[in-house]
Length: 41
Image (cartoon, rainbow, N blue to C red; front, side, top):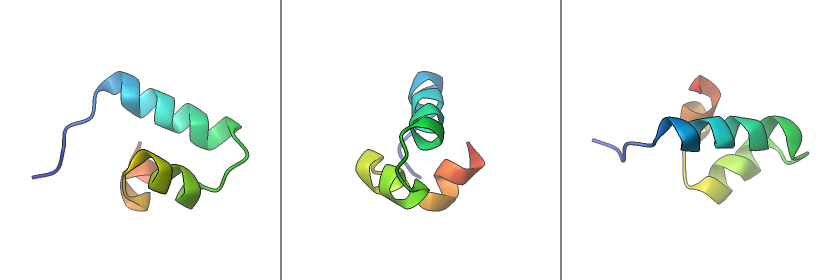
């Protein structure tokens, strides 16, 4: 089973992905989550 992430972490990850100008791949790698996980959030 993977590491559980808090709702706050998920919200921050989505905000970063949408506003940072980085690719989703870069954001996912930086945060240590998978691309598919980030896309689900």
